[in-house]
Amino acid sequence: MSYTLYGQSGFGSVCVEAALELLGLDYEFVEADPLGDEANRRRVTAINPVGQVPALILPDGSPMTESAAILTYLGDLHPGAGLVPAPDAPERAQYLRWMSFLSASIYSTFTLSDDPSRYHPDPEVQEALRHSANERRKAMWTIMNEAFEGCAGPCLLGANMSFLDVYVAMMSFWSPRRDWFEANCPHLAGAVHALERNPVIKRVWARNYDAEALA
Ligand SMILES: N[C@@H](CCC(=O)N[C@@H](CS)C(=O)NCC(=O)O)C(=O)O
Image (cartoon, rainbow, N blue to C red; front, side):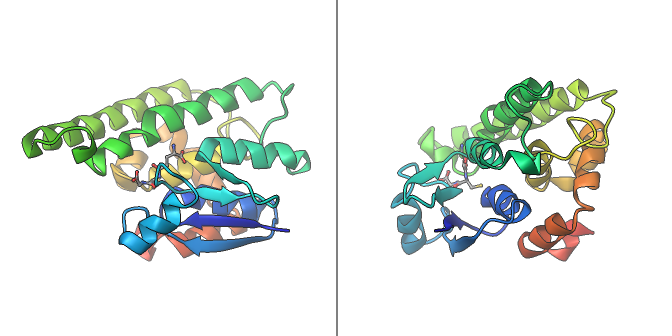
């Protein structure tokens, strides 16, 4: 029995793809663009009524959504890999804090900026909302960056790579994009660079990001 991951190149499914690869788990990838044509969107809503990816079918056939929860679930199922701190590990609280922060305060801003018509019918208001969401995202990155100032590294939680590094690295490619992230989040960027030296991550990134983004 294996996993089935619904996603789209460069989208939020990248972190789950990376997790499955890092854990060496068997999975099938089903391309499903939640912002694409009707057939694509139907493939997504059949699994996730919210119409968002990533969506993962577990080996028992049940669906799971919400990227931060999926990463934590998979990591907890495979404690030997050390990619999610154990419940009693000193790093666990910070891991949970920042995974939730990324999901709730950064990832969620894209639900607004990708399609502000969901929030208001007036195109002028939509533009203002998109702008606010983009600014809010930068402010949230700045808060997280400052919280990691002085951390020992090389990874966000210390010596060992975790899915928190993967989650931050994936979002670093999204608007306001990698150049902004490198210039404004130096206390996070070091861990992203360390993660990106991992050969499994290199392979997953090459499948999802174009050469220019990886330069
Ligand atoms: N809270 C969700 C957010 C997922 C999400 O926003 N995914 C984007 C792609 S990166 C999406 O499917 N957007 C389409 C939409 O919101 O309609 C998670 O963490 O998995």
